[in-house]
Length: 541
Image 1 (cartoon, rainbow, N blue to C red):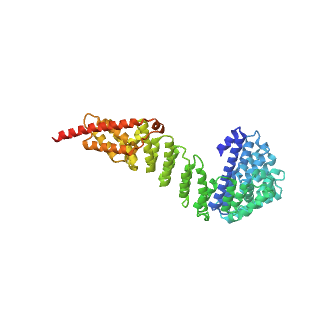
Image 2: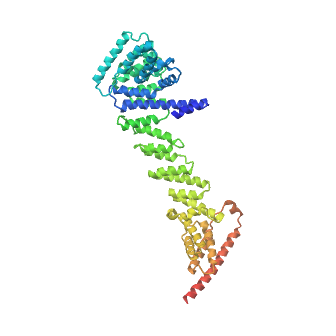
């Protein structure tokens, strides 16, 4: 609030300044009502102590007197300032008697003619009873004696030569007309209420105060219908009607923060009698749900909404699931935060939904590695298969894999789908070949072809990968393995699969190229078969 005050006073933009002032006003109203509800509903104030708490409340939320004090005391001649006596009266109205006496002492020091009256008034202010540890009967007896002394001085016209001191004496007696004359020093009807009770009924109880509140409001506005919505909130609080407080404050502001937190506080204190609403929850949870839902609409505060929903035992989980499904995953960082929230709460469906959404976004941006990572995290076998096919298509077009690190480190995740298993094993074959582990690479390649987990359109690519191994100086494939490769080639030829290539390349492709590749394979297989038979026959002899 202090920062907003500074910004409002320093900005040159009138619109922005008005906006900040409005926000400060709303925050001030929240704090004012919150403190009053603490006093009336939580403190358990008794007769005597109630007014002490209300005076602290007034001092906390009324800065007019302090502003006057700053203006008077900073002037060249404070005692001659137009508002000098207003300041003393204001201190008295807030029961700040020590500060009022200090100013009276200064007046007595410079004004011999008023010195005796200042001493009498100082004595009255000093003797005013204050409720502390004494019994209620003792306090009322002292207060009655003090009040009679004030009346005696007024009747004897002790302050007749000083209208200011005579006015202060009338204030000490709680004269309504005099208090209304000074209502600009109080500014609000609830300040008027507390000041009047201070000098007329200091032992007021919680059960009595609501009638005084309504009367003070009517008298302060003198029948004028200029009361504000905040007045209705405060009246409801003085009537100890917390449901009405919540209802009225919901009208004052469009933010659920105050009513949600106040209801939660009172509920924890077991002072709020929550009634079940027609959809199965209580008032506390309903308000927390509404506030949390509002947080989810904010780009950076949505995570706080999660914490609030965690404390709603009836419908919090349901609301959280719905909000997490609708949250905008604008960045991967936000998606990871949402994912962590869902994983911590075992929200399996929402985890899968977030991962699939991010996988689709990555795939549309041609980030296949990220798409595959998200699909694995979602444990979505069908989508992992689709992305694996895109990897294979990309390999056919570019002659190499992108995101090799991801494919090399699939680990147990490759078992999610047959196609993903094939992708991981196929990359393992290339790694073996590059490391010149030709025999192991040959066995793995043959197992990939015979297992039939590769798409039909990729068979020819697998067979062509066998060509360098068939042309090695040493025999890699045995006769039996060569027969198996021949069988795979014939199956490929009979299946007439469409190759994985782009539409444009497929149109421009010469059909003789594939036939040439097949003939090369057949020739290489025949030569390898002959070499393998000779080698195996020689070994047997």
